[in-house]
Image (cartoon, rainbow, N blue to C red; front, side, top):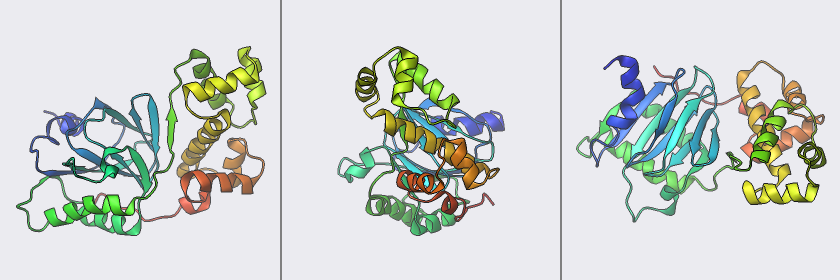
Length: 272
């Protein structure tokens, strides 16, 4: 098998080969798109260098740099990076029915100092880590236990994919006009609907209000701009439709847990 093919397919052939092992894989993603698949083990994914988009069912999750996502066993998902510079660090853990409820729920969380230090420690490890390994196994076993203890509330970094064609059309329109302040009335007129009907459609289809959906869309795009490091925070605010920098910064903080300026700084784990 070619090296590129091996890199792309390790998650299909190697992760679940030994049921009792904790599997470790850290790598530069490049432009690799990981097709829909599932594991018997739960998956911890940490990313840096950009955003990783992860699809589960009808939802798209936005995993930003210096955050991690937990994917429970048997949950089908597809993964693709926002840029070729994205680094992903993966740990795959066996889970038991007696494990804490945390391990059965998809969630995105910020990485704190303790997890970051443990990831630093594991950055050169690769492949199966067995209970008979006296140096590495206690570290990754403790890592799994810590996840449930220190990961309190998941960040709401998920956008449901609309089922109704009218909302899919709306989503395209919003993405193409994020620099404008678009109202529900304008969208309703664009679709030939009443505001009330459109409000109900949003609630029934994507399970959130138009304002909440629109805000998440703006913040996720702002997150991409921040990570590109090509624009000032003030420019980014205008690019996603905010004329008030404090309002933009406060909204970013509410969604992502950090202000845009803080998000630019943080620890980084290099491949070598």
